[in-house]
Image 1 (tube, one colour):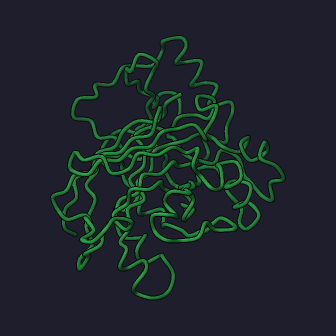
Image 2 (cartoon, one colour; image 1 turned 90 degrees about the horizontal axis):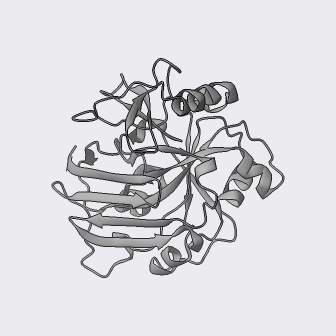
Length: 285
């Protein structure tokens, strides 16, 4: 299933994109798309039954905002330097273990929402990433099979980053990762049954129409199953938590000088095979 949330910020309603690409209203079946829903097999079953029976009302998609596909996200766990080609372009050694950092849940916005270039920023960068959404509470998972069984689904994430704040201003990466609007998510949460192999997905990103990133999750240093298993050794993952699993080569940071960092007025588009497409215009904060 392709689950999404539509409507104005803070007043989104749950919806489903059916096999014919028709937007359907889920608000009569479930209250929202959130961790509680994703952990409730009976509620998910009601959605499938209603969709299969053709009982869901059609929504007029014209002019309707698409919000983040998951509400009330508890935490956004991010994996750094998780593609061989990205580590190479930035001059970093491939890590021996996954590099973990966090984005605050309030950085998450809709896939077509405006992204704000922080005040004083000169090195705002782009990163297309596969997001994993957790569907069952995960603690000390013991195998890759167990890890994948705890995944509710997948989505497109844009891990927007400010490289000066991240690398040159001291401390951890968090200052360059947590600026407002720095994690567009969606348009859909695609349930795990529709993504049989998360290591076979193409990722692309364009800046002002120019292709900048063109990679595949097959190049991940730590595959999705290992990322989920590994993270569960250090923290409890709850339904609705999100893991951004890293970006392939092609970011501004890895390019020759003068690096083409983002400025207000730029337009970024990104997509992951089968998971949909995003578009954001960048404006000054």
